[in-house]
Every structure is written in structure tokens, then in C-alpha cells.
Length: 288
Image 1 (tube, one colour):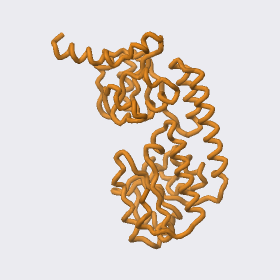
Image 2: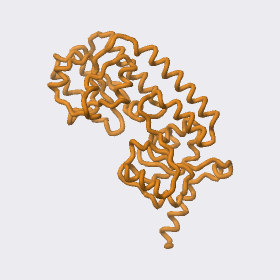
Image 3: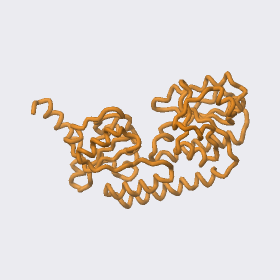
Image 4: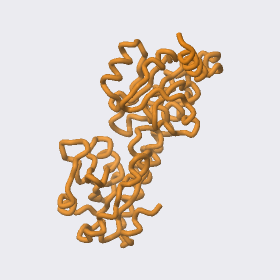
């Protein structure tokens, strides 16, 4: 083994906390950003010895050793670290990567969910699997209670037609069960929910014809340029005429982790503003 390889191995081994080893808790490779957030929520953050690009929350996660990103994985580095558990959203990960991880003998825990209601039991399970059963139960109970409160407060209100602008160029929406469920839980109706594709590309003419009362625009992490300016040329759309174009935090809404409740609250509040009406200046709709 050459000197470069020795240095690399030494750096990787330093990523493993001696306190974790002494405590007898499993070491973890968390290979999707939302998995990192879930693990910190149940108290297992310090056990994470490897993660991927964009795993940036909470702040402590920024210092975790990176072993890959969505289209690249350093399996050699993972083998050197030998984590006891590999925690990841399988539905968000390349099938090739998942197959290779299994071939290498890693124990996988899948954090994929299809709806918000599945997160509470997932938190409880992660607590059990990582040695934090009591903390897992507690955060799961709090999550479930807050989710039920939000749904109770908003889901039964007068339905509001919503266009969810996932991206502006090309113009795209979202029809996944995840986003449909969130909008419905807030008392909204996703106008493109019935399209075959999860992320349909749509035309401005289709949006005009759908006549949304509100337009929701996610921004953050790669979506900073998700423009709303184009809509100012289409005042015949009720959402534009009434200034009901609302930004939301994409990290909160698109990551299936504990912060989804913050995103849901923000979404519900935006849809409630649409429901209540009241003209606002569309040019200021994107301000925070």
C-alpha cells in the first residue's frame, strides 16, 4: 500500500468517533440527505461516519466525510470505514448503487416514504436500529401529533386549485403522491395530479386553461432561479390577478425528513392566503 493510500485510509478511520465505538453504538453511512436529517432527529447523528453531497442539515452534518453524490459513489472508502449500517432512501438512489452495496454485504435500512404519515413510524424504527429507542419513540410521537394537527386544521377547508411550479424553464409541475398528499392535506387541489409522469412538463396555455387560484413556487438548493416573473404577462390567471404567487422552501418540502412539517406549515399558510383572497402586487410575490 503506497503512502497516498495510507494517508487516505488514516483520514477515513479518523471519521469514526471513538466515543461511538466505546458506547457500542452502530456506526452509520447515511447516503441520502434526508436520511442524515432523520438520524440526527433520533439522536444518532454522531454515529454517522460517511455521507453524500448536499447532506448539509443540521450544521454538524457539514463536517461528515463525503463518499459520493447522486451519480457517483466511492465504494472503496465505504469498505475502509466498514459502517455497521447503511441508511438511505432506496427510491432516491441508483439501482446500480443499491445492488453494489448489497453485494458488498452492507446492512441496508431504507428510509423511503410515499407520504408524510409514514415518517413517524420510520423515526421510531431508526431509533430502535441505532440504539436510541426512547428518543425515537418521543420524536415520532411529537411528529405524529403535529402532522395530525396541521391536517386537522387545513384538510377540511374549502378546496383551492393550486399550480405547483417545480421548475420554470422548462415549465414543470409535480404529480407525485408525495406532493399530491401535501397539497391535499393543506386543503388544496393539485391541478396536474392526474398526469402520468411524476414531474410533468406543461405549457403556459395548460396553466391558463387550468385557472389556478394560487401558484406555489419552491426555491432553495438548485431552485434559486425558479422564476415567477413570467406570470406577470398572464393577468388572466386568477393567481396572477390577485397576487397569489407564493414561494416555499424546497428543502423542507422535497426532503422526506423531519423538516417536512415546517414545509407543510408553510404550504398550508400559503394556500390559506389564497383561500382568503385579497389582491397583492404580483411583482412582490416572491419576496421573503
